[in-house]
Length: 279
Ligand SMILES: O=C(O)CCC(=O)C(=O)O
Image 1 (cartoon, rainbow, N blue to C red):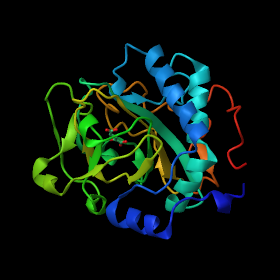
Image 2: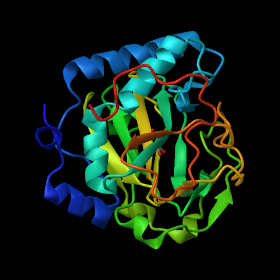
Image 3: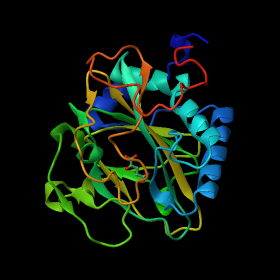
Image 4: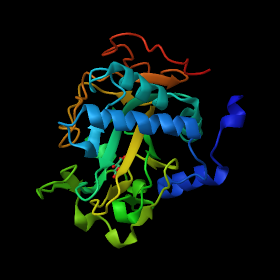
């Protein structure tokens, strides 16, 4: 299929992304791809019971999970042209895959992700990232879907404070005085739908008090005008993160490294053997 036929965002989606910082495009991940994603998430959870499932960082990296074949499966999802075409419409031609994660809230016990801006945690300069969050399960208000403050990305980084409540997925949270939580919108998705959000967006999600699991797989891409700066230590990636920033491999997903300063070799124990990225 030609790249132009695969592209899935409407011009109005792209405009809304700039205006609100998050979009829910009217499209679904192809059924076979979504089936494989759900199977990989199930295997990852089954294989790594000692890691809290709310934020399994970097399942696409061979050193993170227990099974390299599962890591390769996650990497193939994150480099799938279906997603890259969407990201290209938002970030332009040149971008890198630099992170991914599974956020799984088990029924009844899934923890809260407090209000935060992703950029507060990340070593990318200038800060820029588009995150593509795929609903592996239905993600609704009752099982703790994502929530966001429309337009909050326009202010760039705001004050964060330490939140010491137990059982949070993150503990550096946006100062409650710095935004109006009553403006929050819910990101309700059916399994197979997705949202895309900006690095500066204020967002979070409630605990899962329902009887239904809520799993999502998020893939994170930065334009290569930015640098993944391994000398910056922004602190822990999350309270339960399993992958350190400095030695993390990153992948050129499309185009070229505009900055000329990104390192796409470090941490790659062998070349990716899956589908070519720009097939
Ligand atoms: O899945 C969630 O509840 C939170 C996701 C999130 O914070 C993110 O993808 O940046």
